[in-house]
Length: 108
Image (cartoon, rainbow, N blue to C red; front, side, top):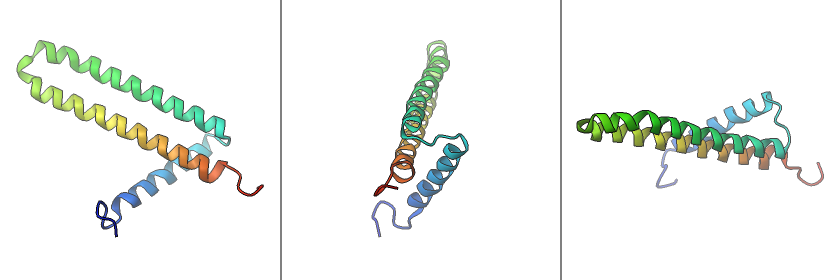
């Protein structure tokens, strides 16, 4: 039993997320470590684009409506953190896919 996940909910959620990502990678014919590393690079690139768009959308609101600063800043921060965590989890899943499915073991 783990103190930070006593009922195994996070582990189950991550396993389900990994299986979904693995299936999508297989459907996309990503079957070499190099292609998977390119998918990681693309994930980082897309995450940075989304963060840029979020910032660009909320910056004018912050400047034009200073009274809405707490709400707007909170929402912006929430969205940026959400995109970053999603991208990091995606990268972890792809790394796991490389290790578990694409790396030959004992001459396979």
